[in-house]
Image (cartoon, rainbow, N blue to C red; front, side, top):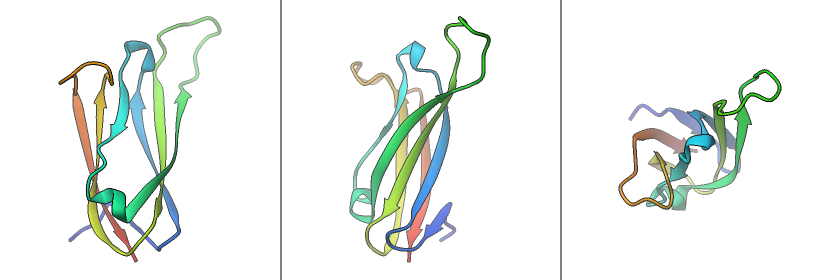
Length: 99
C-alpha cells in the first residue's frame, strides 16, 4: 500500500488544506479506525496575506497529527459546516503508515 505519510511512532506530521472560515465551512476529522493509529495534536487556521481591513480572505487549516501505534490506516477529513447536516462539500483522504 502506498502511503501519503510515513512516520515513526510518537512522530508528528502536518496536513495543510485550503479553507475560508468566513463561509462557515471548516475541516472536520472523521474519526474512525484511524483514531486508534493517530491522534490530532492541533488544528490552526492561517489566513493568506491580504490588505489591511480586507474581509472574507481565505487561507489554510493546518492539522498536526501524531502516531500512536504501528499500522496503516486512512485518515479522512471533510470540509463542512458543523451545524448543518449533509453540508459536506469536499472530502480528502490520506493513507498514513506508522512504523
